[in-house]
Length: 145
Image 1 (tube, rainbow, N blue to C red):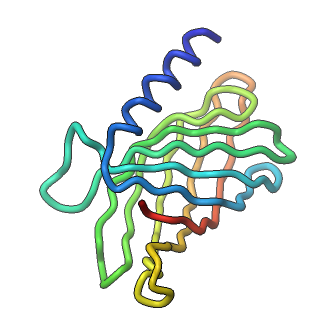
Image 2: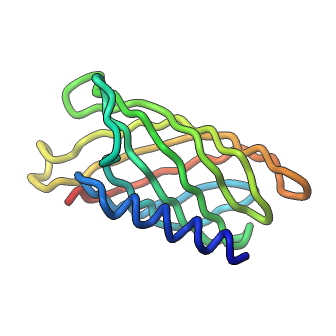
């Protein structure tokens, strides 16, 4: 357990050192409905020539108990205000899972004159040991700082 706390602390430090910070509330489904929060920021250590690399932490609680994920997402702007991409990472829901996820985000700034965005993502979590193998879907509304 101490290793997980240390790993989470290191990931949080890396996330906090990024630019273009955002926070989103989410409603999701994975073996049951749950609500949560997504925190993400541009990666400070590396950025590709095209698109944006973002580190992301998801935390949620619901019928499946406590759930959390850390992943790196690569997002591309495909139209004015529309970003799509995907990422890989690790997830926890009753055990450790490998996590693959696709994302889409739409900037609402031009509609509401605030740095809000609406997003959705879908992913697959492969559980190791007794951890479940499951599809994860999420809708989110967030604010970019």
